[in-house]
Every structure is written in structure tokens, then in C-alpha cells.
Length: 131
Image 1: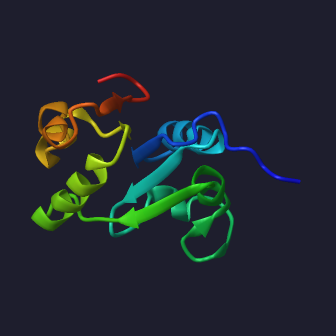
Image 2 (image 1 turned 90 degrees about the vertical axis):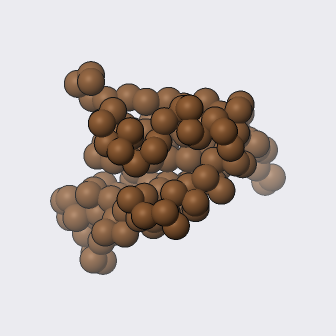
């Protein structure tokens, strides 16, 4: 049986989300065929150590929320980390983040800066309880 590409095949999404809401949303995009690249801190996403797990850093929650995604660990506070993110953004259609506005500003994750590398980028920001 040959699988057909999902409805979002060809869409590239950069996932800068944590906890549950954002990772679940981007997992749904990946389930529908989008190429989702999960960007984690060097310590890994906080969900890696939540709940039951067979292997260190690979909780059931993480395995569920990070399914069908590629991933990369980056120090976004460093110049090198920002350059890596810029390279990812150049080839992306969407960047999804649930970082707080002040954190995004501090890290340079603003539409003004990101759109310099990709004017067509869609920046989706969402906070569980508003900002």
C-alpha cells in the first residue's frame, strides 16, 4: 500500500514551543504532512522528564508530542544559535512559538528581525493564558 502525502506536504514549520499546547499543535501539523523542525534548548524540552519513561529524556509525553518531527538543540541566547535559527527560518513557511513576548524580544525572535531573512514567513505566537 502506497501512502499519499498529507494535506500539508511541502509546508515547513519551525517549532519553538514547549509544554503541551504548542507541541500538540505542531504535532498535528506534522501528522498532516508538514515538515516540522522542533528547536529545543541544549537541556532539551521540559516535557522530556515529565511522566513515565523507559529511556532517560524520552518520556511518553515527549514521544507523543514530538512524533513525526525532526529536532535540533540550539542555544538561542548565543550568536551562533541565532545564526542557526536564521538559516532554518530562510527555508521555512511558518514559525510557531509560545515564548513570552519579553523572552522573544530578548532572543530576537521578532517578526521584524525574522522577516529580514524570509519576508513570506508566517509567525504564529500563542500563550496558554494570554500575554
